[in-house]
Image 1 (cartoon, rainbow, N blue to C red):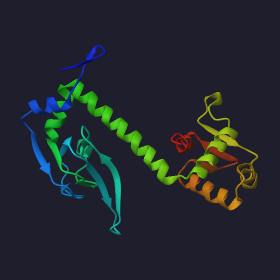
Image 2 (tube, one colour):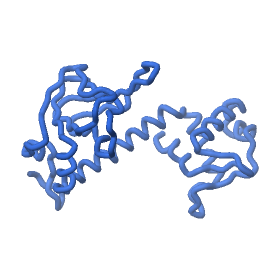
Image 3 (tube, rainbow, N blue to C red):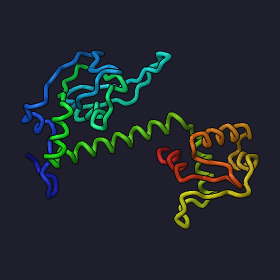
Image 4 (spheres, helix red, strand yellow):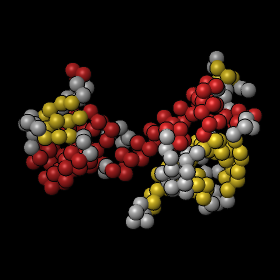
Length: 218
């Protein structure tokens, strides 16, 4: 066991290798399905080798890649939150080796091993950040980010500790002139912001603090 600062380095691989009850190891070929959307959610997986994609299929049979996971990542954790069925397909992108951890065993590990619990929580937080970055980049173009930044500046975001601010006297024509774009583009983007709950019109333009998420990942 290595040490990092004053704390010993925790290796989930070594920890899981000592756990026999409730865990199994499995290998998957490239493009082999680990589990399918709709399967019973009864376990969590830890990647020892290879890469896993989580894919979602819509009713129109459209495939969307939710995230790509690598060595040291967990997946299938939805069962811990009461998810009865898998919400996506887990597919091996390359030859993979994983540890399957039964739900009850995973809960026991999280309760009894604080270092393992901390590692798991850290993974979930980092993955949520990556997912948020991807979602913002997918939903919003650079021009939309410029408008979001301008609205926050006009609303004096961050001053007086307010999370919702009002811009009383600003027109879409004025915004278009400042950003040197067309009114139609401003109208389209403002409608998009409104549908996402980032702004609203009510005796002025209300700018919500959540609009900051649009520009955090330029």
